[in-house]
Image (cartoon, rainbow, N blue to C red; front, side, top):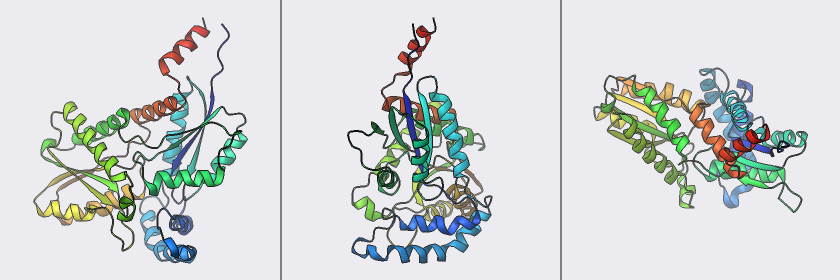
Length: 347
């Protein structure tokens, strides 16, 4: 039999991005605050440009200092590239993947991803895969709106597009988290007695009130993780809670806050805790500095004696398997039948 031609699938991995040097902190912040999905201004939208410039200038010295403590750049580009490479490798037996990265606020930007796909030649389909487990207007929707602005609206001649809007409850994503937590639990003499603190990126309440499903998605992830973890580990922690970090500006955000939670638990006599960055799939400033440096110092001040942070799922086998399954499902390819076809074609 003649071998079947594999589908040639373009895959766009969306992420927030981060500055690649200390000199790019200000333009990164400017792009962030120019996003109407981050700061909705309504009828005052005409001041967005000057306001973004002002906030970026004002915040740059402090933010640049934090980046200086974690390697003088965001690691998100390097870590996302590792995910991209491993995903291509995992998908290659089933399709011909052409995977590119589109960062929302710093290079490679969405226009860079579109150009890379244009240079790649013939494609059969496009899969849009935001690397945000939980759908939010401020992350998933913002990235997809930017894609539409740059790539254009679909028409009769456009490639078929498949959009993966979330994967907060995917079994392999849940297992990636459970596995990482399990490794960290070994660092405690009796992990059943520690407090498990799930920390998610915060969100303005104005977006939640408009129907943003993000907090509900996060809560469901935590429920599934704890349910699965308790079945797999005899000493799974008996207590856990959810808090939110990275608040910016005076507006009301999701609560309780990360810092407030550390202080409250410390004053309640909690001596050991494991912080799980639940909404981040790679390390960046929110994990490496906000949780692992500032959070560690705050916890110590509050009397916590043993403080650990779970690493992000990154390019772990379970997480790459999650992404692989999401892409194959989107292009309607079943791994078992694809593998059988490939085997019979070589016989």
